[in-house]
Image (spheres, rainbow over the protein chains, first blue to last red):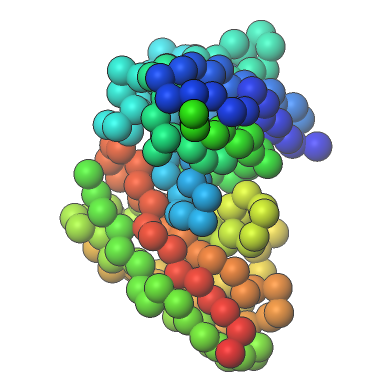
Length: 123
Length: 107
């Protein structure tokens, strides 16, 4: 079964750090582009960051540049999000999501999602 | 960044009715637009990619159309399980962006 499982969320004080993990199973992890997407309580979806299959290309939304770092370990079928200088507005469920790949290439659409891990930034 | 505006914010319909959801982009995204469905407490589910292609296992009552800046998701006849929030998302340029969502609720 194709699956993504996030972990590492929790309660952290403003200015603190957390490292989220996403473990993949059921597919060839290194062949797929991966992302982090977040959703604040009661709000819509917000894309956070992207990493290519090899890990050489990375993109971030502007408000997270310099604070968040995405990485992956293909040998361990895992992706990570290091979050530093956390703010109250970073409180959200963080999902890892796979980009759908078809015979003609990447679709840029997220076809597999984990259940998410909750990050709460509060004093 | 490319802003996606979804309308209406809420759509109140009865089962069996047709739902028409709109997504407008602040600049052309070609056909690089996807649609998702999200139910409470669940992650989103991919419905449509590249504007008009149904994802694996998505029923034929869901269809997408459009290109450039104007896109539409149509649910031809609402089933009880279709009442949810729907999001559009573009992959034309960085940063990737989502629309604000349309809630389809039971009338």
